[in-house]
Image (tube, rainbow, N blue to C red; front, top):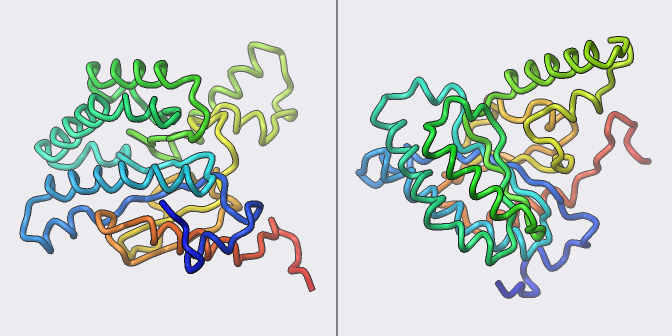
Length: 249
């Protein structure tokens, strides 16, 4: 993508750009309804949007992209919809692995994979192994993911490690818990984008979003393009990140 002088990205200093962006990809079903199609149609176009957004992420110097692909709660959706989503994921992995390797993109999966069908689990493991040496962009797919569960499990693992290593629980630190999150060892989250108009986190990256900037857009996910990503990054660059400190006078 050629960045023209009118592009918001061209005016942003590298140090002002977010390094880790997370996206709640909302709006597939509404987009499909607007087009007189079923939900599966929206999910397929949403997958194409995700495929297309990887290239500008690389060009903008983003180090990590996390996406909310499938939540723990999504397992309770109608069986046909869940089956279609799993089939779509299976097709995506088969079709896109060579492209991920070619683009030097490393795949990371965050979530409870015990609930994912074995055949897809095996594909995920193969894809992560095949891209483990890639370092241009980390592509973190949050699958069967729930932030509250993630934090609970991280606390359990941390406590168990304390027991095994004879560590006083009072010595537990934020870093120890963070090390046991699904997202370890990904970089700190800078910017969280939600498409579709809703303004909530929906149990997504609650720990990681503690000091992240939030950006909400009415754009439905299948309509999300590089220019929308530019706008979000431009808005991020204009914000003063204080991490609990007072505003600079």
